[in-house]
Image (cartoon, rainbow, N blue to C red):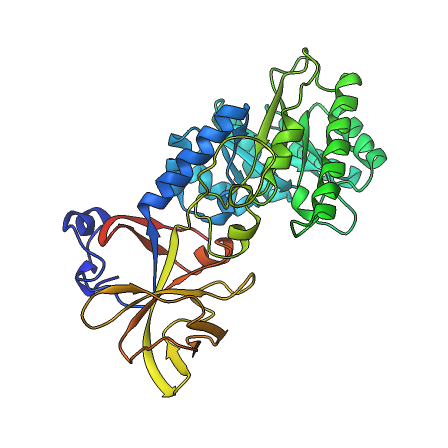
Length: 411
């Protein structure tokens, strides 16, 4: 943040109508493009509405309540969390419907949750169960607290070698029966994650995802026939990361029995920020996808600016950006634009330079045609927003050069 922001509230700083290049920001600096954010919000909301889907964006991507607010304003059904500490942050900011996409067996967490449910009748919550031991742990903790509201549970159906989730249909059946037998729990649906089935977009991988989703769907129908969902106003059927949600939508929106009130919920989180790497290749709206609509792809909303501080070799420059500032787990930052002392921003030619590695506080920029000087600023596209945001606590949102908002994160 600029030195003249010290001591001011975010609102007071924004009232000064700061601009990115004149306000005194120092680098490296992550910025968010407001136009791209709004485009992505509208694109996903319209597509979900068109296909009869609800979305509970995964908040772990940003852990930014201001961005949760914008997602909810654009029709999000709720917000997804991954653990109890994220859940507590969401509640501190008033999120009223939360899907915890994980098992919850911690006694302290369950005690807090039970009290939260009793204190707010309008608070809607559900979490996963994938084992009989997990169900026992939940019931034991809830019985010790003595809360009045049951905890809503989705049976999680997983895959061999993947993350959590019952590995077989028979295991899922046993978990469903155990949940249904406990008055402190309420079975409200089934959940899964197709992203553990495959990690690329080859036809064989997409076919394996279809097979998983068909088995997932059959499990929902089996539980319905067993009477587990009798009397429910909503049966939550949830899947969908940010790479294969077109296939999830196709599977979850095929006709269900008329008496089964299915609510198909996507949990995609990466769509809001998109990226210049992992999701640029894998996001359905950036490639051929299964369902019509949303021909306009998502736009990358993240950019990191870093300054050239050393040019010790003809083909090497060092910049003020390292592993503590940017993601590197799904690809290195992509140099896109350069700004010199004249203040003009110019696009870098494709292939004229690339990041070959990152140290803690430095980026190694290999030059194969680009001309850079010490003092120049380079703007980089980034891959995988989940491992970008956790490095930043206060992020400016920009419209061109104008700073329109400040987004605070709570990791």
